[in-house]
Image (cartoon, rainbow, N blue to C red; front, side, top):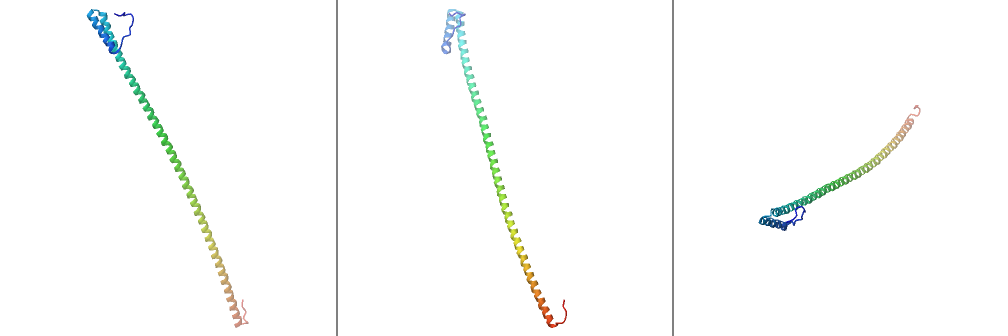
Length: 170
C-alpha cells in the first residue's frame, strides 16, 4: 500500500488501468479497502488523463482548424485586395488609353479642319483671282468697246462732215 500523504505518479494508459484493476481486486480479496480505493482512484485518474488527452487533442485540432481557417480568410482577403488592385490598374490603363485615343482623335480632327480651312482659303483666293481676271477682262472688253464706239463716232462724224461740211456739230 502507498502512503496517501505522498502524491504518486501513476502509470497512464492501459498499464495504469490494469494496475488500478489489480489493486482494486487485490484490495477486495484481502479486505483492504484502502488498496481497493487506491485501485479505483488509479483507474479514475487514468480515465481522466485519457479524457484530458482526448480533450487536448480535440483542442489542438480545433486550434489547427481555426488557424487554417484564419489563413484561408487572410488569403481570401489578400486575393480580393490583389483582384481589386488589378481591376483598378486595368481601369486606369483603360482610362489612359481612352484619353490618348481622344487626344489623337482631337489632333486628327484639328489637322483635318486646318487642312480644310487651308483648302477653302486657296479656293477663295482662286475664286478671287478668277473674279479679278474676269473683271479685268470685262474692263478690257469695255475699253475695247468704248474705243470701237469712239472710232465709229469719229467715222460717222467724218462721214457727216463730208456730207455737209458747213453744219456745226457739237
